[in-house]
Structure formats: structure tokens, C-alpha cells
Image 1 (cartoon, rainbow, N blue to C red):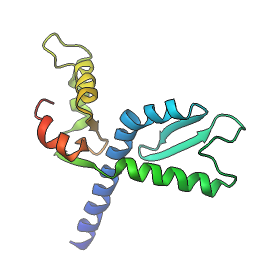
Image 2 (tube, rainbow, N blue to C red):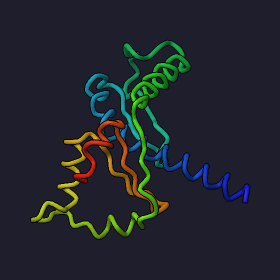
Image 3 (cartoon, rainbow, N blue to C red):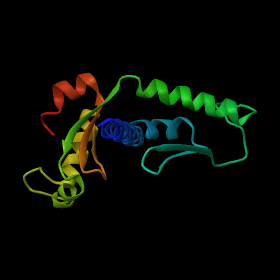
Length: 149
């Protein structure tokens, strides 16, 4: 029983990490790209955040050592995620569910409509490989606005 509890906690942490990474990608990366055009931001392996300089020039956020650069971004990401929560809607066979959602739908139930709602509400809907569906955003937005999704 202890190993299933441990694996459940690890799975929950991985799901939470993936959800937060997707939220950063959708809502935080764009503003950082505008502020720091010489840097690129990406996600590797579903939840590892990768920030790299696209030029040899030092930017205002780069310090002479890579440790300073990493510390700066670690703190920035931590601050961005401070109020972000992940609500796991459970095992909904997410990959199959996502495949069933049409790209466009005249009744407003397509993928394009979902993307527009996510941007409007500042909430990310994440379809995970472990079959779970997540809602990710600020707690107040999750509580008040997500019934629309």
C-alpha cells in the first residue's frame, strides 16, 4: 500500500508540474519574450523549462555566471507561479477526449473556441498523457469562471 501511495504522490507531482509548465507556456512566456527578445523560452519533456540566449550578448537579466542567470530565472518563475493552482479533473481519457474535440464547431465547442476561452479566462486546459485533464490558473479564476469551460 505504501508504494501505491508513493507512486500516487509522484504522479500527482508530475501532473502538477506539467500543468504549471503549460500555463507558463501559454501566459508567461509571451510576455517574457516581449521583454527579453534575445532569449528563447521552451518546455522540454512536458515540464522542464528551458531558457537560452539566442545571441552571445549579455542581456540585462544575464549575469557573468550561469548560476546568476539560473537564479534570476528560477526566482522569476517561482514568482509567476506563486498564485497558480492546478485542479486535476481526474482520469478522463484525456488524449482520446482531445481527439474527439473538432478544430472548429458552429456551436462554440471546438478547439479554437477552447483556446479563445483559455486566453479570455487566463486558465489553461491541459490534456495529460496519464489520461487526466487539468485546469490551471489563479485560484480565484478557477473558482469563478471555469464553469464556462
